[in-house]
Length: 64
Image 1: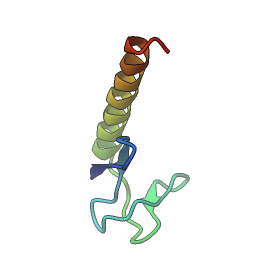
Image 2 (image 1 turned 45 degrees about the vertical axis):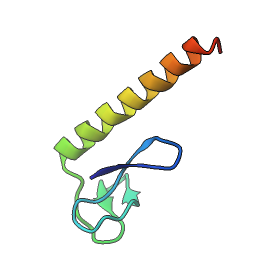
Image 3 (image 1 turned 90 degrees about the vertical axis):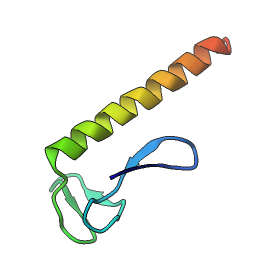
């Protein structure tokens, strides 16, 4: 599950319990232990890329 934080950036949450804390070494949720599926990881990476592209475009339009 992907949600947007107050700064507008995407964040990944567990599909099983909604927790936003993951053990990146084990690729699992700290709360319930559910593994983050590859499809969810790929979707999150795409959301991050889109967010960073938007920020980069925003900076270039503002002359920063």
